[in-house]
Length: 228
Image (cartoon, rainbow, N blue to C red; front, side, top):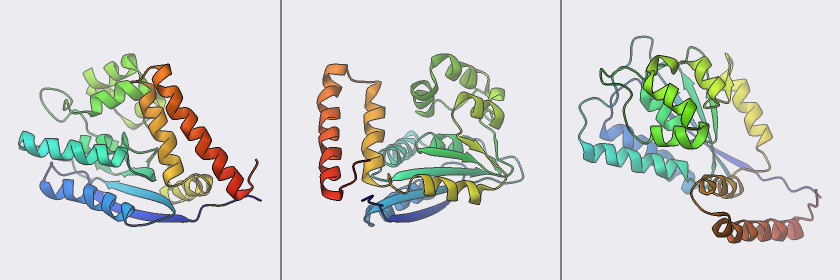
């Protein structure tokens, strides 16, 4: 017997050609709220849409308390109890990169271009820099951050920041949802947390958490009869 998790797909469309505003923060938190209000195998699809013209410099004339709220919203998205898919389309500012780095699968759709170097003093020093080091390593992150011209789509794909580059984002998304049919929701979130913690805790500290996750998986196998 093979148990399939029924997917509940929540979608959010976010304009990432504009500066940071309370409304932008609210859109991230609203997406998280809607996911948490659902049950079962949850998937959040975040469509990040840019423009044809040059996007606004990131974050614009924001105050640091608003930046803090934005960072908290991203952290919530990153630890959401759901599988998350980010899709970038059009010409975007650094907000697109910051959101993509918090998602589980990242797709560059039609016309995606990232203007991460629109500031005169270099890339915005938010926690995207931290996530880049954690996810792609210091050497690659240093090149991407210190030379913002290197943050084009091909470079981000080579670095592993992007998982796919496609002209058919709909088909790519459908394929991801099909592949994730048995691992959406809390099961995907649990494994993500184990991966995120791997860079910050010792093996001895991690062992207990991994054993607990293994015990959970074994109990699920007993309940579903899925011994594959």
